[in-house]
Length: 123
Image (cartoon, rainbow, N blue to C red; front, side):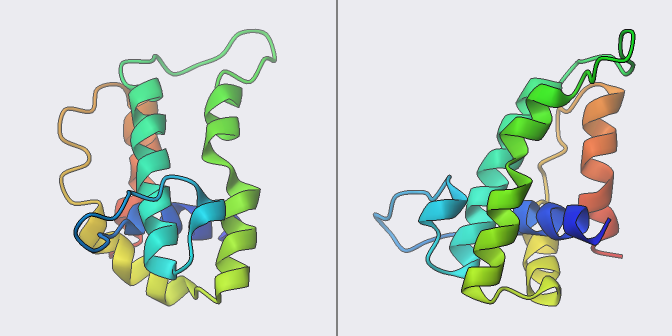
């Protein structure tokens, strides 16, 4: 569960880079914790786009969210956070500011469930 929370926090944390810098969307390209959470924000946006309007539930033992799990790249985020020395508290702090407004326009129970841990990290 802590690994999922770490990914959630990393994805939530998003950040900004200097003027003219390309947005980091791949955790492997991140050179700082701020860039790692920026990549997380990009992934979270892609996941929400995929989930938006999707109904909850599955069909006959098939994981209805396998496409989303692949997109999230949990292992890559975990590995890069360790390599960069990004702590959970730092990522959580960044996450609270970065995800404001992300839920606007999100439709569907799966998307709301996906966002819940991000906002819970700020409590």
